[in-house]
Image: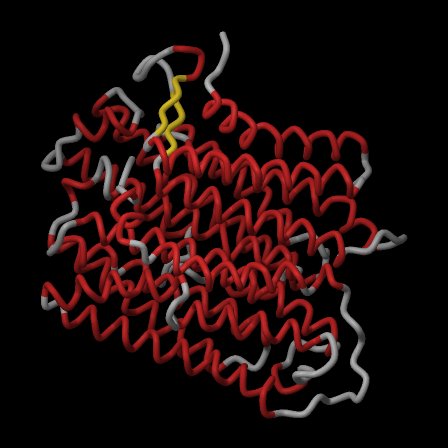
Length: 487
């Protein structure tokens, strides 16, 4: 049977990263040409798939020709294609950065160089599978592939603090997995189906089994996405991992878990999204904005500040749920998807630039970072652009996402959530402004800071630029109309 072109692109996105990672593990080597070629091909496949979905709409492919519920299928919606594109951009940037960051030499650095890329590719394959899977169990499998690769990446350096953070992450992830799987079992026991489309049509919001399953699924995903107050594992894991690993974790891994939460609550669980549930989610989001923002402002170490920023930034995304109660859900889901894409690009750029600044400075203390001088100035430019996207300065992708949500909040008179968004934005400006003050006002601590490789500067700069210029694309009204919510 000859697969259609779109199905071939999906197969490529799922198999190429996993097959390359397996080959690298089996060979015990890390030929940079092979790994970068696989990353580039995966990016090209994601771009082609995104263009196809933009032109033709939602794409569905039954595996082996068996239709649900007997068989399983892949489903590529427009929001899913957006996340695949963001994953490809961050994945390629991380591959290039990792090739320049990890050095092939005897000892710990040589070991990290050998295992980083296979683990990165395994995580990339898990992300791609999560964005196209269309049934609860295969989503669980994709989550586990992603989680195991991510935990191993956190422990990559084998430092005591990194191993402790990895163990805490592993225990939190296992808890989230067990609770999520319990929700899958509850819904399957009640309806005998795992397919998202089938559950959407069959799920009874009033049935206790449906409610229990929804609670279990939600708690599991909130834990994996490190949403306040279940974020206890995130600062250590993101702050103590190597910079390219932190970029993957903060930019994509937690965003993928939250994307799945959106997919479920605006798909099969949509009937359960009542005023009380939406308000609870909104309160959690407001708490995340305040708690994460204040702790980010208090940090004296660069990577820990960026890590706590992730906790705060996902507070914006949680506000999607209460805003969807009082308005047409399409622009709200669109805003939520664009927030995740902006976070993936901007936060990954921020972590990669932070890694370059730490390497140039010899310390991750903010007051000891090199200033706007030498090759470090390019890392600072990436920080400035990424900060603009996270704050939501026009015409960045962050502005386009927040503008959609602000318009809904104003139109519906949702002043509480409007105030939370504005307060969170001010906090974001405060802690990122404190960081930028170091670049613009403080002199460099050394007259001749180390020169950084272009591989450590270009990926962060390009990701930050994408987060800025993609706002022009996202602000197109017709594009907004195409970003339809889909299971």
